Image (cartoon, helix red, strand yellow):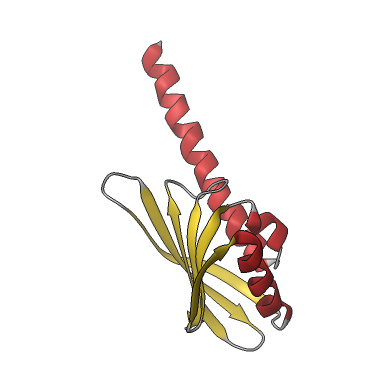
Length: 126
């Protein structure tokens, strides 16, 4: 009985973390900075092209919102992902296609992508 409970707990936690990841990238596609903000740590490393700074999540979301206001996002696709050996961190690389250009979006998180886990976001030309 304990094995069955453990098995279902593992499956459910995996599905929840996958849903959180999907929700974050869905929020990005919809330029929903309020939802994205819930995934960020209080201070993050935010890089928009060559401008890299450690800043509050509010300041990072203000910069991201200004950038996204000048774009019409057509598609966001996670292309690559990785996890550290001890599973304490992970990253995702997504391709974001807009009406103006195609961008590479790098997201680094402690543990799974979930509430207050994202430490770094980088956006560069693809």
